[in-house]
Length: 373
Ligand SMILES: Nc1ncnc2c1ncn2[C@@H]1O[C@H](COP(=O)(O)OP(=O)(O)O)[C@@H](O)[C@H]1O
Ligand SMILES: [Mg+2]
Image (cartoon, rainbow, N blue to C red; front, side, top):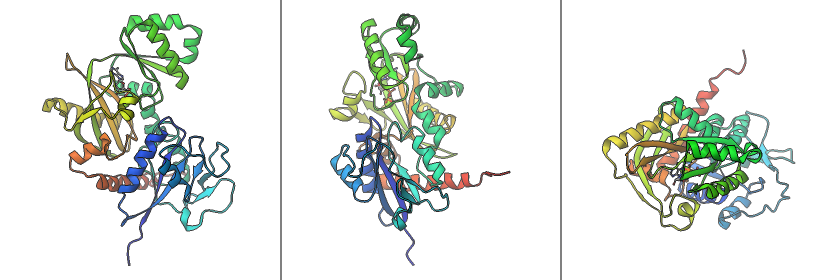
C-alpha cells in the first residue's frame, strides 16, 4: 500500500510589515515541496489577522499582496485548532465542528516573517495545539526578534557585538536631551537607529548628525516601544545558514553586496540591484570563525530547525561582529538561506524535507517530557 502522504499546513501572510515577503517565500515553499510525499494545506492570514482556508489562501498568494477575506473580517483569528491535543484539527473559531479530514494536519510550516509569525506568538499557539512545526520554539523565536535580548545573550556566549544602547519610547518622550547626549558620548556618529523588534530593515535609519538622529528615533518609535542605537561599522555583510536541532550544522558563508548605502528595504526587495557572492571571498580562517560563531549563536539562543546568522566584517580592521539571527529567513529560491544550502550540497527540495524531519524530531523529543508528577 502506498505510504500516506504527510499533510503539511503552510502558513503565510500575517499581521506583519513583512506580509508580502512571506507570500513570496510561501509560494516558493509550496512549489518545491515534493508532492509525492506531501499534501499541502495552504493557510493564509490577512494583514488584519483573519485566517483563510480552502480556496481563499490561493487568492491571497496569487495577489502577491494582502487581500481581504471574503469572510467577515473582524480582525481576529477566525480559524484555530481544536482544544483537543490528540486530533490536531483546524476549526473555525465561530463554528463547533472540525473541518473533517481536510482539517487534519501532520506538520505546520510557518513561512512567516516578523511579528505574529516569527516572534514566538504563532509558535505558542502551535504548542498549545500540540502540532509539530518547522523552526524555532517560543523562546528561540522571541529572542530572535528582540535585538536587545539577542545581543545580551550573544555577549554571555562570548560573541562579538557592535557597541549599542537601548532605551524606551516613553523615556525618549520624557527626556530626549539626556538620551541624545548619552548616544553622542557613547556611540557617536554615524550610527544606526532601529526598532528593537522588527525586520526587513523597516524603521531603520542611519544617522550622521544630531538632526538625523532625532528624526531616526521618531521614526523607530513609531514601530516599537524599545529603540536600539548602534555604532556604525564600515562593513562587508556576511551571512551563514544554520540547520539542525541539538547538533546544528553551518553552511558555507555568503556575502551581500547592498545596492544602497546600507541593506535597507529598497535594496532588499525593491531595486533588485543588490548582489551576493557565494561563497564569500574571504580568507578560509575568517569563514571558519564565522561558521563557528553561527553555530554558537544558534545554540546560545536555543534555536531549532533553521536560522540565518548575519555578520559584519570591518573593512579597515577586519574585525568580525555578529549582527543578528533570522529564525525564518527569506525563503524564495533566490533568497540567501536556501542558496547557501544549495552551495553546500543541499538543494532546495531536500532542504524542505530536512526541515520537516527536524520538526518531527523536535516534536518527538518534547513528547518525552513529563507534564505530570
Ligand atoms: N551597526 C551597523 N553598522 C553598519 N551597518 C548596519 C548596522 N546595523 C545595521 N546595518 C545595516 O542595516 C541593515 C539592516 O539592519 P539589521 O539589524 O540587519 O535589521 P533587520 O532585522 O531589519 O534586517 C543591515 O543589513 C546593514 O546593511
Ligand atoms: Mg538583517
